[in-house]
Length: 560
Image 1 (cartoon, helix red, strand yellow):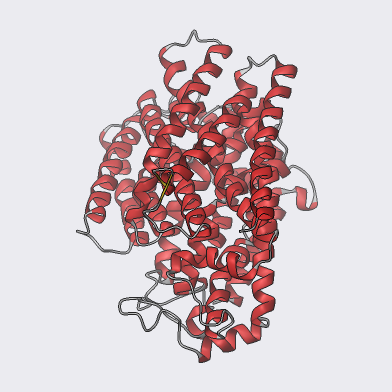
Image 2 (cartoon, one colour; image 1 turned 120 degrees about the vertical axis):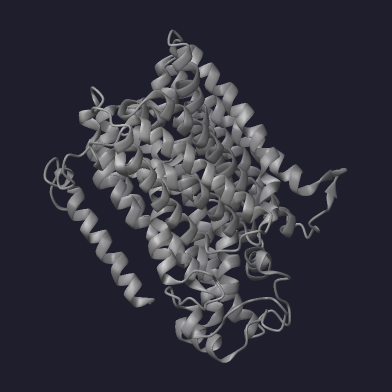
């Protein structure tokens, strides 16, 4: 990259860190810096546009820019299912989960489990949520960003800078910068910076997608090229790729497809991952908990669901475009050295000076916004679910100090854990495999806890522990190459096992409904759809949900 590109990157780093610090300064001036509710939940002041953008930003990371392009270069649009299926689970969050969370006015989801079941359930979920925030959310984002910058600099995977491994150095710098403004500003800084970073991220993604699309000659030329030319990796033994319009631009695949994502695996497995990630994970749902009222808590996730339409075209499609450009010999014989280098290859070969810096800054934005969201969630969990429980006399100033220390420690732990993702074939595969082993017991407990009045605290605790053990066993087998099954179907069968465990143990260890838990369950699934609509037209969450659902169905019919 040119000096102009690097100048843009450096200016971005200073600008986003400054914005986070400014948010912290205003928070201190207006709230005297001691209100835990303002530090962790932004004073419950968030409206639906900010909630939707912040949820979208917390989800989008360099994983999307890099790993989705990597997967698309090998297998086409099929991995876009993870984006469009997310919209369906966000509708579930809006309709069924968000009103209960707002009704209980909890600061964390483990707190919700304690009110519904018992303290032990809260402790187990707190530990799992800390693991997911630091390893799954932050660790993978740092690793992917570091991999990208290694590629931009043209460094080999094991290269060093000033005697330090380049990957580790990049991970440490990004983690330190993100931790700094998250410590100072709390959730308000996270939301402010996320909103700006999302705009920059989408700008960079749009630039590279539109540029590649115009270079390839439009959709008809793209389809024709894919159908009549062999894949660039097809000649490499063991590359395991597919090509041709019939597969590459098709979102629904059969069981013989090399991607390993047949349509039934996605249909059965994704809801297990998605309900945990979008409805029960602290890092994502914390923005809903900070809503000013139920209307905004419901509409925020629906706005995020609408935004999830676009990643298929902005993050997945570039990988397919890159295949067609290489097939057309647009790069004069050059091609990505591996599928993992797809996005970096397009950045360095398609964009002029200046725009390269913009897209590179967008990648930084993606990593930093995910990390800041995870750090703030980890700080909230430790402060409220661990220290506040055992020392209820702690005041807000002490809780904020604990949260800041947690942010620093969490950043260090994520930096240490990040290189573990190099173990997997693709980064996107790695993160979803981890989620498929973590999600099932939590999804089972929340679903049955919210919709089944008889579910007992003892059964919830047994399910969380047993399901976590089962998930760890599957992770161990997978990590040591002793199991090679479909990880999406594995998640589905783990969910079934967890639900059977919870139902059986509820009858073995029955308990009366906990006092005060009446407001945390739905007696009838129709209940949240019959009242508190919030307004007319699109302001009515029921109308907005139906419209978004119709859009996703139409998209699937178009790309089936």
